[in-house]
Amino acid sequence: MNSTHIFWPVLAQVFLTLAMFILLGARKAAAVKAGKVNRQQAALDNRVWPEDVVKVSNNIANQFELPILFYVLCFVLYSINAAGTAAIVLAWVFAASRYAHAWVHVGSNYVPMRMRLFMVGCVVVLAMLGMAVWQLAT
Image 1 (cartoon, rainbow, N blue to C red):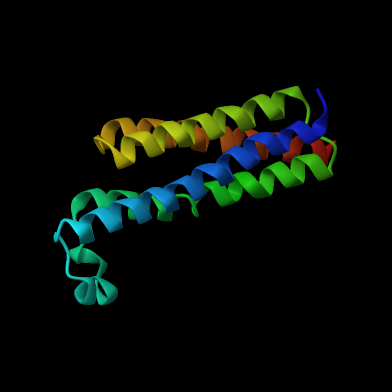
Image 2 (spheres, helix red, strand yellow):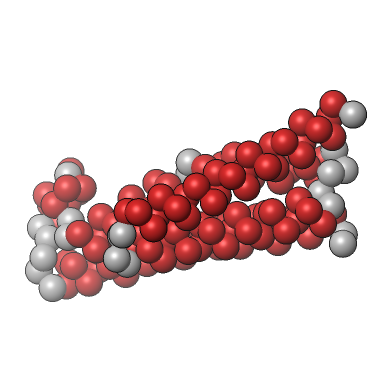
């Protein structure tokens, strides 16, 4: 497998983040159109948005937490020539876990399932960190 293939799951994660921004815009527009929110209040206080908007907004915040470490590790693994098959598979598992996490977060928001999916991503990032450390140490 070509080491540049590690960037496909990175792009998939970027796409997920952008898709969440689009979903946020759509949900905000629908809330305003339905008269569920006062635009002037919403400009100063995000707490006035309906729950379905807040879910997406919170998910977007999540896309700038653990995924940042994922991005860094993908670039590190690539730069130290450690982006082999195992790293690429792990990267895809991470991206898949984030898509599943986002699906739950903006849908049912069932916290126990969200936590499990988040932990899958954490374990993957830890494994990728271990691969990077091992490669650098040997």
